[in-house]
Image 1 (cartoon, helix red, strand yellow):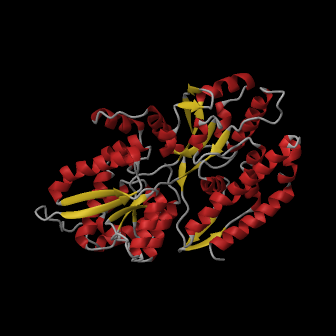
Image 2: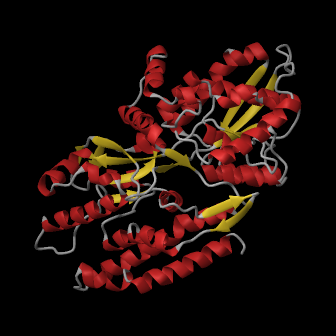
Length: 485
């Protein structure tokens, strides 16, 4: 991947290396194989991801862990929000809360909050310059959330976004209308294709006007805002020295509005189930953009009330705005180490270094759809080597997802905004403010159409410049409230 914020990376790495020179990175190990140290890890993995993670923990305990004197026990806390609640309860000393784990999975916003409480270990003290150089630069930069620029989040598994398409139902639509996959590479192209799909499906039942179907949906609307703005040359959250300045240029936000809200209100886009892969399964959508880790959930068949049928799939890169810069989201939790004592902190880093070795990390990625964090592991060639050497069975969807990202890595810049106070609250505004309004207004449009109005008549008052201006003002107010301004 292209370096993200090269100057900031250099500042971050200089701070990390300065601590290495005075830290214990090169000191003798404090571990004693005759007196093993026990570590607890909290995560949010479930299903096959949890099985894969637990298998690697067991392998570590039986090999390197036994050799060095480290024993790891892992516990799923359920969902991401369950994990965050458990961590906050532990830090706050809530009655009945479990003791803080030695290691826990954390997104940057939550890690920043815990760091502000002084509860995270300084990982810079346990990693050499040579070790840090092996990791993707932007992943290390994301983890440098301490005020002095040192590392607090250990990159363990990352993801970005991809677009997945129901190939089986795409083909007759494309044959009938001339729709092309090439057009789906841009956000505006997806919008126009979605309109064409709505009109085509509406035309299948000429005696029932206005019953066209949605083509596309999007998981993580917050990513659409953050990455969409970045593609257009803007950064919505400008963070310097831990202080955030909101940047909400009206022209760029108008482009986001007209390529999400407008097609949602008109029924060209949709969001019905918990995730857009659910909507593909029920036949309500043909395509969606979501995390690489969602590939395993893309359905093998569409299940309707009166019939089921098998479907094939297509994997594409996430779209960018026309004439926009080629940015994609960098996401996925890393692991943080609780501040304790040298022995436990050192042992925790030893486990995390082992887990992120190319073979082990790719083994986990083959199941989870997460991207490996070492530079040398981000290639289809290395992935194929690991699959062959470890005799792994990899779901074709996950394999195609990973190799699609690897193929485009040299032309793509991964981006995530820097952490700041109230960052989680601000992200929730991006996630729900426009999406909730679009869903509510779509219901009103449907009601008007049932009363006999055409789609154009029913949506007329929702897609005007006045409507945009009103939303823009409320959106800016909501963001300011979220960040305490």
